[in-house]
Image 1 (cartoon, rainbow, N blue to C red):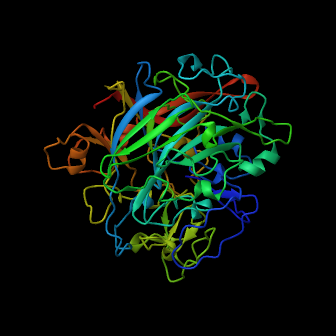
Image 2 (spheres, rainbow, N blue to C red):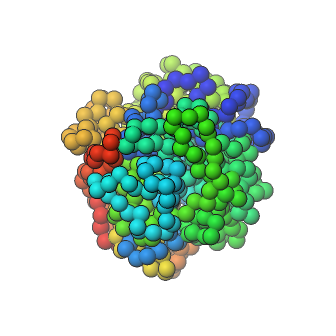
Image 3 (cartoon, one colour):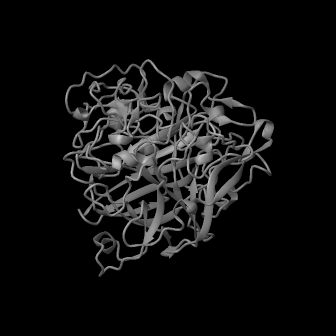
Length: 555
């Protein structure tokens, strides 16, 4: 979830001299080029920072709604070598997409991901020049000292099929489609060029090139493990962000995927093994694949990429292993990105564009009897004619009123004629063993404090922060999705559970038939959590950025 200020050429991916693309009808993949392009984190689904007002000055950025499961273990290796099994969601038929109550995966969460903390000696807090890989020696409470090692966060993001495709995602958060029917995935590594002790950010010359102090190294997961083009934001080109079915691993809805995240001699590596199609793909966050740090130079003009092999930061995944500049408190996690899609329906056609437009005046942000007049968050909208499969109008800016598709009861609930199925994923294992504890965490206070119009939330004190977000009129959102587990056995009636060996599986959405435990539904996110961060001069500051509850791992 995020808010943009009006820009002349607003975009998720920005280019030094990228011109608008003339579009008519469904979009095909734009020809790859060597033109410089980068993901702009003030417009994107990047890792959520703890204090965006300090990082995204003058950008009007709000934040992302990211309900998560966080997995804890004190065993060595649990912070850097793990495995998941998952089943990709399936969507309803693309026919009649505007039917009352109908929804698709891209409307609910344009991406979801599996995360891990990594070393980056050029990243926040810029106080230490080393970071021993895979080591709990990197654990340091900011309340004790600001001399924490520099850190990054990796998200292995999965992208939904069917709507407006890459590389239009250059300019529209939420338009994360690689193919009409296939899923794809990418490694995203987020770093932050900020020194909180001295209150400095990266120089403006560099920020104009990479977009903002938070930046991303990006590479699709490919069949041969080689990036299509440089991953770092200084050297990245349109080729970096253009899906290629001949090179990238494309996966079908319902496929069973074995996911491995581990370290190698040349950096963090993710491997996807599609057990259904018998294809596989990988990506290593290495200098050879064009991954790089950006040299921190707050007073100069440089924007120097330093070829870099990114390695995991921690040995374990205890509650003390976190990225201290992030709003969330996690290391090993599975997270859903929600709150980006809003319907745009009415008599006035949404124009075809390369950058998206506001929902035309007179149209409604929604459909049916509950549709409301458009407002300021109905921006970056695209017509159904631009979609590959599901021909529906939609907007992808912040849903600050918490009334978009993600905040309605359109989530997986067993009604597959109208709603998608949930992603099913196992708890991670490390060395063949389960993690001991799991947390449910939602960063709603971080968003409500500056996002929702008229929200009473105060992150300094926690006063007024609501587990169910409040909309523009001060009333609670209609719905907030939650995690549950299923224990269907391999011989049972659930084919997805059968694919995953009949083990205990996590799912996300609404009341899903066969759920063994929904952990109190919304109450699963627990109570307000106070976290410690580094302030000016190295002073300690605290914020209430999350709701969190830790339980014994039921799986």
